Image (cartoon, rainbow over all chains, first blue to last red; front, side, top):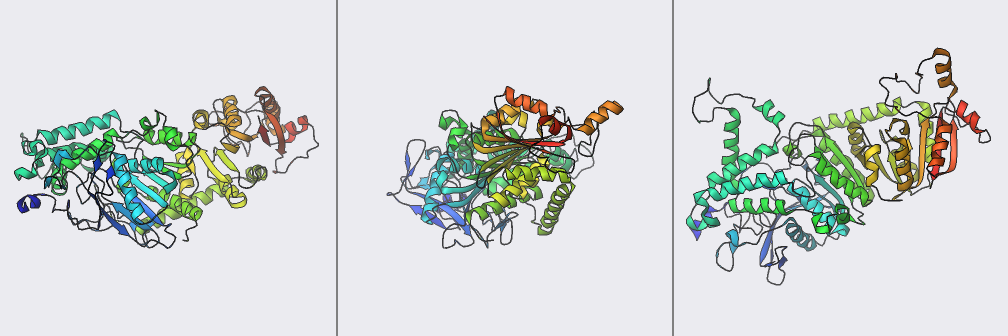
Length: 389
Length: 230
C-alpha cells in the first residue's frame, strides 16, 4: 500500500498539504449521476480574513487542471499560485481586504475526493469506480464548504474556463448566495468542437497500455505517455495561431538544419513535449478523464428547458463577463449568448471583450485590460455591497 | 498554464492611461451635447431603472448614478468605449442597437435612452419601436437636420452640410439616417407613441421656449430631446 501511495501525486489526493474539510456518512454529496458520494472531502486554501459581517468572501473556481493553490506556492510543482498575478495583498483581488477561498474541485487530484483518492470500501484508489462528476456536483460541494464558513452570501464568485462554468452554475443554482459573478473565457455549454478535443485527449490516455482500465496505481504504473499526448493536444487549443507563430514560428530547436528524422526539430514540438512531460508530474490521468467529462456534460440551458435566460430568471446578482478575441476554445460568441440571456432575465451585466493574440490562456496572464475590467467591476460591486475600501 | 510576473507599475500606467483617455473624451464632448445630457438627466426621476443605448464613454450613466442613484445599464457599439466604462465600474455591454435590443424583455426598464445615436442606426424605425417596447418611457435625442444652418448649406452652397456639431463629410459619416424634428414627430405618430415632453436646443445649447410652434423649433433647434411612451 505504501508503494502504491508514493506513485500518486505525493499523496496529495488523500492527505493534501492544504486544509481539508471531511464529510462523513451523515453528510453525503448528492451527485447528478444519481448516487451519493460518502464519505468525501474538500481540500481548500484561504487567503485574507473573513470580516465580522462575513460579507467580504470571494470564491475562486479553478479551471480543468487547476487546483486550490491559487495565490501561494504549489506544493507539487513548487511554482507560484496559478492566479498570483491577480490575487494577493495589494493586488486587484486584494487579500488584505477580501477573504479569498479556493477549493480543489470534486473529481480533482489535489485533495478533494477524486479518482486517485482511496475508496474506503476497497482500500484502493477509486479509479473509474468514482461516479461521473458534473460541474453542478462541484458547485454543490463548494456550497457545503461555504456553509462551513457560515457565509450567507459570497461577495463574488470568479473563475475562467471550467472555473467560469462553475461561476455560471453558482449564479444559476444559488442566486441568493452570490452578490457578484465574474465568469471569464467561458460559456454556458461545451461546444461540439470542445467535446471533440476532450475525446481525443481521453482516447490518448486510454490507449496507453499503462492505463490498465484505470487501475494503474494497483499495477504500480501511470499512463504518462497517453496523458502527455492529451495535454499536448489540449495545450494547442489554449493558445492561438498568431501567438504560436509569434513565439515559435518555424524556428528550429538547438540545431542548424532539419534532421530528416522524427526528433523535435521545431521549437514548437520541443515546447509541446515539455508541456506534456511536466503535466504528468502534477496531474492524475483518471482525474483528467473526469474533469474533461464534467465540462462536456455542462449545458446550463438544457437544464432549463433549452432556454438559457430561465437559468437566471429573477436574478439580482451583478455579472461581468470577459472574453478574448483570439480564444477559439470559448469564442466571444459563447460569452455573448450568456450576456443576451442575462439581458433577457433583466440582470445587471457588464461584458468586456479583450483584444489579444494570447488565446484562451490569456485569462491566466498579465493582461492589463482584463485587470482594469475586474478592478472596475469589483470596486463598484464593493461599493454596492457597502464594503469599505 | 503560463505564468507572468505581476507588475503593479505597468498596471498603474495602464490605469492612468485609461483615466486620461476617459477625461480627454469628456473634454472633447462639446458644450451643446453636454447640455443635451443634462436635459435627458432632468427627465429621469431618482432610483429609476435606466438603459442607455449607445452609452459611449458612459458620461450620462455616470451623471445619472451620481445625481439620481439610478440602476443604470449601458449598451455601446465600440468595444474600446465598453472596456473603459467597465473599468470605471459601469454596467455596460458591447452591443448593436440594430441587432441586440431584441434580447431585452418588455418594459424591463423605466427609461430607455437613445442619445445622439438614432441617426447612426440602420433601421431607426425598428430601433425606436424596440425602445418603446423595452422601456416604460423612451428618451430620444438627435441632431435636427431641419436646422437653418443645414438648410442654408444645402440651399446656398448646394453641398451636404459640415458643421461644428456634424463634422463629417458625406462619405465618412456614421450618421446615415438624418431626420428633422418634424420627421421624427411623424415617425412617433406612425409607431403609436405619445410625446410626453419635447425640448429643442439652439446652437448654444439653450432650451428654446416652450410656447414656440413646431416650425420654429424645426428651424432654430439644433438638437431635440423627446420623452415618449406607448
